[in-house]
Amino acid sequence: MPPSSAHQSFQQLKYVFLEYMVIAVVLVLLSLVFKYYLSRFLDRKFPKKQRKPKHSSSVLDQFLSENPVKSEIDPNVARFLSKNRVKQEIKEFNRWTLSLLQEIEWRRFEEVCDFYFNLKGYNTVLNNFGSDGGVDIRISKNNHLLAFVQCKSYKNKPVGVNVIREFVGVLTVNGVDYGFVITSSFFSSDAISYAKTIKSNTNFQLELIDGNEFLKHIFYLSDYEQRQLLDFALKGDYKTPTCVRCGIKMVRRSSKSNGNEFWGCRNYPSCRQILH
Image (cartoon, rainbow, N blue to C red; front, side, top):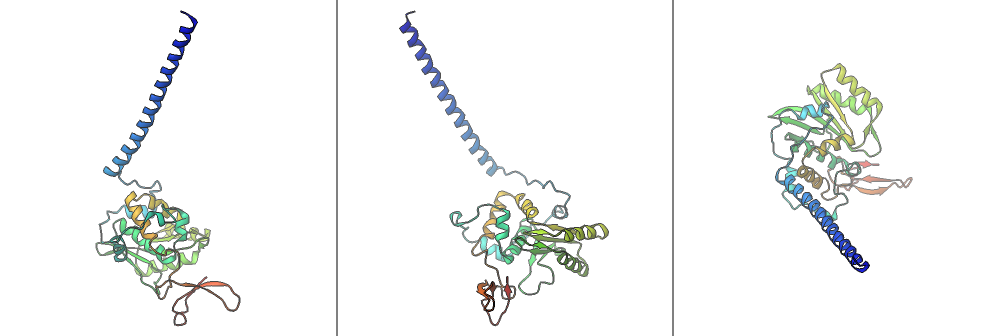
């Protein structure tokens, strides 16, 4: 075969090889795209059953596994869900993170915890403003009181042992066996030690749930329920603290004596509640 013919044949083979390579790459990409959309379709059409967290030995997991009954959602939550959902583009957060949990002001954090138990199928009563008697949420089923919840919305501050001692006292007085202290922050070492002692030496089913642990429980909700909870958490002004006494948003003020800033009630001077 003349050299020119051999060269032409080689060139043709090279082009054919390249064509097949391009076709193969395109087919691989198409298969990946198809697999992705098929997976999304199947997840929506046939949602996976909720899995229990690996930490299934916790008191909260034990409590939630006890045949919950579906209940009416808290009226405040229901009013929100009946309206249009928050537009995604105006949100600072689009998924649950510890940073988000710690950005939420104390009252909204209580409402988020309350809504969480609603989503798990329990009837809840969230305390109004003023003295809460050491209990933020009362959980019941079939009109039977089951558990108390104390919520602490902190950022870089631990929940100390005194909070746990007072909460155990409330459980004792009311004859309630299950108690959960949920915080967006963490617990001090003496608080953790005290809770372990109570669980070992009494019949109380007490559990301390820090921010990371609470997130784990949120992540084991369905995707739709996580979205509901997130939309509710981020509705409106979720950062400005609420007055403990009046239930309205506080305003930033400065001390006349030293210039330090603090949160004060809008109803001052009739209400002198402050937060630092």
